[in-house]
Image (tube, rainbow, N blue to C red; front, side, top):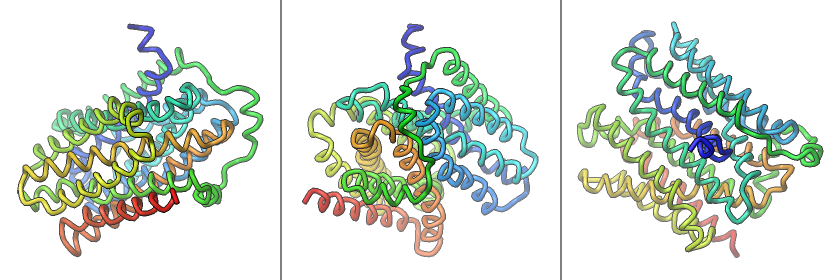
Length: 386
């Protein structure tokens, strides 16, 4: 049992889980910060938006540094940053402190790209997509457990949930410090000499195979973030559902996501192949978004959410698995850092755009806009195989 708990794959799972745990904890307790600091929703949203903003810049930088100096020291550094950020959340006295805490968390959240590179190092190419599914499952599970902790402990104030998150991060740091080995070889480090510059994103997008996978990953992250921040408002407007019901539905979505990415990705890839699976998954997500946006009843809502998760949660790990197989060994951290940055860019754009169309044109529009974006991705995927 102890051997399994200290295996590199489980440790990487734990590190990623801790990052999303803190992200999920904040969602149910945001009204507490709004009342505590006596600020409007915009300033709280601006503080939350600092996380993907910092991730956009930190992801590729930490990724390429891990190519040059090794995965382990960068993972330990970023875990320390996560611990500090949770302490900022616990003892914040104003929205500015919360903003700084979110920036620190976003910078340390760049360790997801290093975790992906580490997983690429320890898994053979034929198992690469399955390995990325483990990471994606940790992301999903963190977003299931986080809101539960936030909802349960948030009734006692902002400190208890944040301190629990800090304790989880400390546990992850200690496990990594004592049991996580380095994977990078010296010859690989020597090859990774150039520092990342952001024009590398444009260069990577122009590479035929990697480019389409990167574009699809960006699109799915944008489509999620178009509706996720306003999901509880959508439920309130359409069905008059309160906070508890919204939390239950978020937990349901996260549970479906975790099951897909932890247990079904590898089997589906073996059955269908990566490219065929990707085409099917994108279309399933499109139909799920359309059903959810136009839902006339809770039964249809559950069907739409299930299809959305079943489709969307294959896209991330399959895309990352394909990217990691096509990237050179000396560029794993850099390319997967680009993946993290594009995901963060989507999560920056989505909330503001989704909130605007929600306010101007109605609660269904963010879902329809996401469906249209993913349909364009499906067309691009078809054209890439010509």
